[in-house]
Image 1 (tube, rainbow, N blue to C red):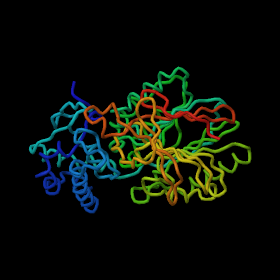
Image 2 (image 1 turned 90 degrees about the vertical axis):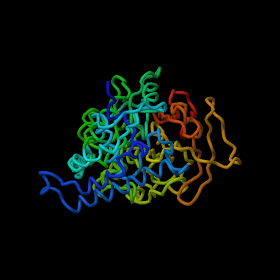
Image 3 (image 1 turned 60 degrees about the vertical axis):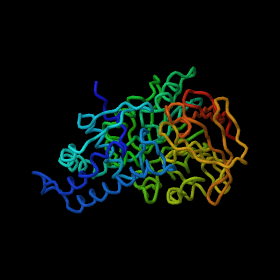
Image 4 (image 1 turned 180 degrees about the horizontal axis):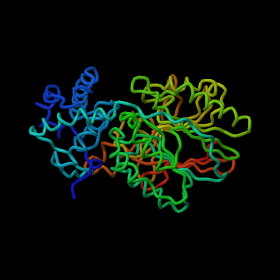
Length: 440
């Protein structure tokens, strides 16, 4: 059976046969019978985006520090044209327009040759135009009630269908004590298209009877306009909106949509309407004696990436008044546990390591790592302006065969609610606990 689009790894190495005449063919090939429907400005932007995409893909293999430097390992950039190009070519390869090469590290590399260039040019325009418009935003509903004693499993940047992602799902589905809530913090690669949502995300989602499943919107889903996210993921999860809230007597859990109004330049952002709805929910919860936890795709702060000042600014009143107990996010491909924020007094957690193959950081040896039972380690982090102290998970990834030591470990996080108490557990992909402590 031929590999599906969701199993394809699109690398610069596999595109070399297209590079010579590919872009020229796209630029010069007549648009066809629907030429009158093509906006020349949009068409020029597409061509410029393709040029930038090839530069980025080439850099991923030539720069030894570039994330995803191995050509036989999936790499996805925070760049809409690159993600769309990869998504398109994966579908083309699944239709037999490239040679699939089985990869020891996982998936199939799509190898194109020069004769594919004209075919690529003929279909790319119409495919690309499908994703120019964003899906209509859906307003949030009232908070849903959950029990006072529930277990929540959290995955972030999980939508690869490769590496440790399937193992995370199996570990969650087969846990001795079943989970009540399953949450994805966003990112289905490459561009959250219909084929990718079905083949890289829903296909592998943990099967836990009676559990509530929820998914956050993200930048990669929005590269295709959020269409598959709103039309496939939300109905599959019986989720009415990309913004939601779950509550019990003691806690209010709010899922934010930081991607619909955000972009790669500003990071996460909330519309005024969403920020107003969230603020009202937070104020009502505080009045009722409930503590509040936020979940988003983008980060409000970071010791590694840019600060999420715009996203945090959307909720500056609630943050300044210290009304938020904790905030969990993905987007950064790491697992980072922060100490309480000095200004907002909240716990910050980056859980963006569940399925994406992320290149390991280099740390000074003087940071005295804590070694875990599986050989991974926690590295202490020093505070800097905008972000408090904390620790980051480091170690090899046994699921990326041939490159185990280049890439960091995949895994997930559990929250256990017991009335007003909450316990937090970080798991390796196979379920091994790497951190287990109450939040107080």
